[in-house]
Length: 475
Image (spheres, rainbow, N blue to C red):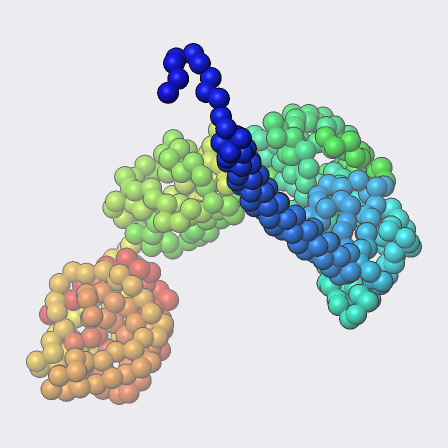
């Protein structure tokens, strides 16, 4: 034992033990450090091997890319509004790549083309055309048989071009003539022949120009020459000055045909008035203040079609009366869909017939035509037989057919069907006065209810009696 603070003295043996144990500890530490260093070296080796593999793989891929035939273009495919002067460049890549085939279509039509280095030469020119679609097909072949097919499409810059309808341009009094363009315009210069005052406005989109004629007259024809036009892209009208023309017309006046025709005579008292226009009328509601008839008679104005106006009197016209119907024209009147208007008033005059009446006497089996109460024609008839009597009463002819088919009901006791009954004048439902060629027994009851007359008499009555003629059937 030693006291505190004293150093023990060791024998040589003891000192040797201490040295040996210290050496062991050093050895152990060195061994540990070696293991750690070797593990780190192994990991680094793995990392290096992985890096080498990735590098080799990348080199293989890049080598394949260099070997495979491939083409790129400038500008990129799909480009629009390209500058014609810049042309198209095609760059070929790949080991021993050669151009196997080159096809170029201009606006869908194949044209001669070749490559001058990387520059595409189309139809002998490196410069492209404006307003043109280009489609390029390039087939390449590589060193060991690989092939590629590349397609490139382009459209070049557009020059200003008007869109002219097939029938030419039409100028309206309101709205002028709308001239559409393919691209936005910056300026437009034009000329009218014969010369006329005009004014030009271009809308906000700059793609429609409106040409107004302050001294507007319908039915005019002009030659419109586009002297020059400049688009917002700076390009001018493609055609040489004065070479691009279009027809310009003002609207055809709104015209109306009238029935009955002007000066018609012997018109039925129940006849209405029909105006048929050469254009659909768009402001139909104003017609009430434009139409008048003399002598005044109540009636109904209607538009059965956009271009057709009818006036139907509420009661028949008087006999032997001159009827005058008028429709006021002018810019404030009716307007057609094209902007047209009636320049003049439309006046129609016709005369109603004298008082006419058809009198059928079932007792005497006769038919008499009366004008103003005076008999002018009489013939024998065959009215309905027993069980098929002709109805008595006061009627009027409501429709006429030169030829009509007639038949009984399917379950009738006496079934009949006649396909070509002549000169039929309907006066009461299915009852009529008509010609009969299948018998000559006039003067005796015989029919199934209608009033039979000879074919010759039927033709005369048919032409004499207009629709609306009164018919009196009595004993």
